Length: 157
Image (cartoon, rainbow, N blue to C red; front, side):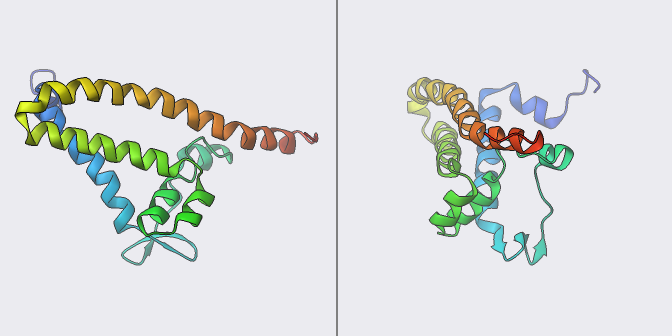
């Protein structure tokens, strides 16, 4: 990338207002996708077109990653199918809630300038929450990975 002519995205990230706009668009885009994509009998579909599997880790290794099932979980949750959502991923509701809070945070920062300092303090705490969320995703994944390990190497748990 030519450093004398940074991309639009890089230019936006140089300014706090631009950063909040970009992140608001990313988070609301993620949430919107959950409502636009719909489950069908074979997986997920968008405008009646079947979507391919989205996990690069699983496609490459054949093994699930800590986030496998999150997209399907979000889609089921967005369509009111709570039981199916939990069956796809036990932490789908938590990750979707986290993204919703991030969208709210960035939207409020942009909309209410008098509260920006308070929102920044609250936002830093919310940003640290991604570490806890990542740890929870790995803890949730470990029992599945343990079962796969024993299955792959022919030993019983």
